[in-house]
Every structure is written in structure tokens, then in C-alpha cells.
Image (cartoon, rainbow, N blue to C red; front, top):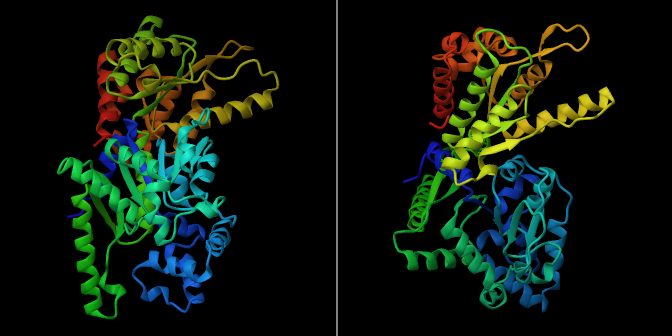
Length: 474
């Protein structure tokens, strides 16, 4: 029996948040960018030796026949270079999975799409395609990409023929060892993978023989066999029965299937995963230069500290731009909980992003601050707005803090959930009024909007906000 996408999202997001998620990418992930799959790579080679790849079920033997016929590996190497050296656009699924908070990527693909997309996402990947590379660690890496069947830049050592697989244990045993360790300790999402690879079958079998029924749980995508795609009912029935049996067989090895009716659904699920993965990252926006009853300086500091502490207590990661009048209190409140409850894991629960200072050019400063805000809000899923006032340096008048307004606009653009604490006044009140007038698009606030507008009891506001945040996990 397949699992529902909601279960996948819930469990895989938990794995990402705990740092235990991994991806295993097959040829189907690269195909939308224009690369061929295994059968597509072998089709012209099979034709050269008078075979029809569509009639063959043992593609390893097809590759071996071709190698034997040609007398060397060179023509196969050239075919790999020709097929996977193209400069292609990164497809949406690759972009999403490389933006996710995942460190470990495995693939049987020869192309460079994953590492290219990681770099586009401003991440520094370490690529391991040869066994000796497993012994080294790249400085300042943000992700590791294991290419267990080789890389297009080293086609002579790529794994493709039957003899390549037979010699795998002698030439690349540490890849199997590393993958076994990851399959036991991490939660994998298999994407674009057909599960026809003998290496993975062997590794999964070994894990099952050692752990029996205690195999870890992983997930994969399959496009459901649909009757509308068949003109022959008997063929449809056969493929449906085979898919059901394959699903059961994968479950035996701990791999749960998520069915989709079209491949576009996979992209939508990945987008939901990305959005859900950020829901524990909470940005607190606000500043206050002049204190207005009932918000005295002491009460503002108490409120900011208690709210940050409560969020950290709920396993959130608090982001702060160190806003005037509240930044220090946010830090202190978060640190109190981190040091008392979270094993002093500061980086896991607190991210401080003070704005760059001493930029005299106003245009350059505005541009830098805009990019800075976009970077912060790109990483978060929830934005909380409180207070938001400043004093005009020339006139001395009390104004709405335009920085908070800009953060609100960017947060909306990035798809953050907005929580305005209108009872604190100023920009927060302005945002609440806008949200209230369009409450159908903020349904998660429907039961709380009145309290957010009027409640000034610190403990009650903290309780309301943390309840809204917790609701997003469901």
C-alpha cells in the first residue's frame, strides 16, 4: 500500500529539520533538462550491433555486447561524453531539491546537474565520483554529491556494462559501504529512479539481511499506471499488477511509494516540501525608538525576550536583523532557552543578521539592505511583525519604520506566513489592518486576528503566536 503525500511531507520535513534527510537521484530527474535515460543512452549503441533496445530487458547485457563487439570501452566512453556534456538548463525539480536543507545527495547519473544547481543556489558542493575521493574532505563544503557510477569527465571509469557491475565490489567497494551507512542513518527521497539498478538491489538486500524488519523508512515517487494510457486492456492489467508487486517489494526494503498521476505533481510536492521545511524558521521583524503606553521600554524588552524564548522552546530557529529596541531582547530570550534546554546549540536555534553599516552611498546602502533582507526572508517560512517606529533625524517626528514595511513586502513576495501583532502599534498595526481586510488569504489567522489586534497581555500574546506557529506543523 502506498503512502499519502501528507505523510511523506510530514516525515521528510522532520528528517530535514533534524539533519537526517538525503536524496537519491536517477535519470528521471535529469530527463526534463534534455538528458537521456539509460535506455536512451543505449538505443543508438544497440542499433549499431543490430539490437532493438526496446525489446531488451537486460540493458547491462546490451552494453556489454556493444563493448565486446567494439573490443574496447572507448566507444562507450565517447557515447557518455556526447550524451552528457551538453550545456542544458537546470530543471525545476533539481533547483528545488538543491535548495532544500539537505547535505547528502546520491546519484547514478553521469551529468553535472545536481552540482551545477547547488552552485546556483550559492552552495559549495563536494563531488565524489571516484573511490579515492572518499578519503578527502573539501574545505567549506555545503553539500556532498556521491556519483556512484562515475562522472562524464571521467568516462573511462564509468559504470555501465555488465562487467563493470561485476567488478564494482573490487573497484568501488567504499561507495557501497558509504551508501549502506547513509541508507541506515538517513531518510532518503528517491526521485527519477526506476529501481532497476543491481547495485542498489544488492545494498538494500544486505541491509535487510542484517536488520530484518527494522529497516529504516525511505520514500520514492512512481507515476501511477493509468488505464487511459493503454489501448490494450490486457497490457494495462499486466503493468498495473507489476507496479503493485514492485511497490510491495520496495516496502519490504523500507521504501514507501508515493503515487502521482502526472510528473507535474512531483514538482508541486517538492514545492510543498520546500515551504514546509522553512516553517520552523521564524523571522522577527520590528524596531522601536519611542515607547508609547502601554508599551514601556521594560515591557517591550520582556515581550521580545519571552516570544523569542517560546519559539526556541518549540524547536524553532529565530532569525533577527537586530532591530532597534528589540534585537538585544530577542537574543537574550532565545539564549536563555538555548543554554537551559538545547544543549547550547546556538546556531540551530538562533540566526542573527545585523544589517551592514557605514555605507555612505545611500543608493548602494539601499541596494545592499534590500538584498540582505531578501536573503534572510528566503530562508524563513514565518515572519512576525511587532511595533515598527523610528524618529526622523531631521524633524524629530515619530514615523513608521520603513525597514519593517520593506520586510513585510518581501515576506509576502517570498510566500512567508505573516503574523502581525497589531496591538503593538505602528507598522505592525498597519500590517494587521491590511491582513484583516483580506483575511480569506490569511485563513490561518482567522481565529486569532481580533486578539492580535487588541491583546496587550504579554503572556497571552506569546501563547497566541506560538499556537499559530505550532498549527503550521499539522
